[in-house]
Amino acid sequence: MKKVATWIMQWIFHHRAPIMISWIILLITLWVCFALYQNQVTHGFYVLFAVLPLLGYSLYFLFVSVRGLTFIPLTTILLAVAPFTNQRLLWVITMTGTLITSYLIYYFSQALHLDDYFEGKHQRSIKLTRKWLMKYELPVIVIRSMLPFTPTDLICYIAGTLNISIRKMLLGILIWEWIICATYIRWIQSIFSRFVP
Image (cartoon, rainbow, N blue to C red; front, side, top):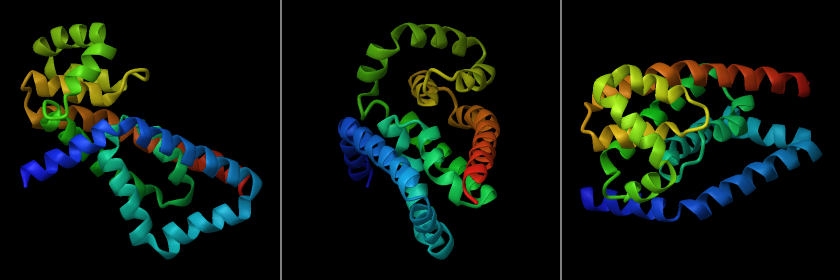
């Protein structure tokens, strides 16, 4: 079972660029369609999340649970679905998916060769974070998760390489993501409600 899971994770990771490009194209297409066909798109998402909620929320949960392996920012996924969903349910699913993707990155970072990606792209940041993380584990995880220009997935990778407790790492991620996801969902729904009657 672990070999199959590793193979799936490696496939997703190695195809992250086409997956991310496809996701961006899909997101742009949805926003253009929304601008041109507001009533039809709104109705389509309404059907997906109100009439067929099991399908809509299941697809969303799947995206959020594996998004860390493709390095798609959570904000883009929230932008696409938040206007059409129940705030509390979306928040619960988002938090669960975020913890799952953090867990996957923590445990599968070596199998996915994330060191090649992160060490090349964020070398200076990783070095500094490792230094502080060895001294102050939980506060650094929370603060590092807050930084807007570096992926939260990076702290999961670093925590995994330093063998920091998975519980401590997930708690640190949960503390900040709890606040930011609730804020994003409210803002997105508030802004969207001004444009859609």
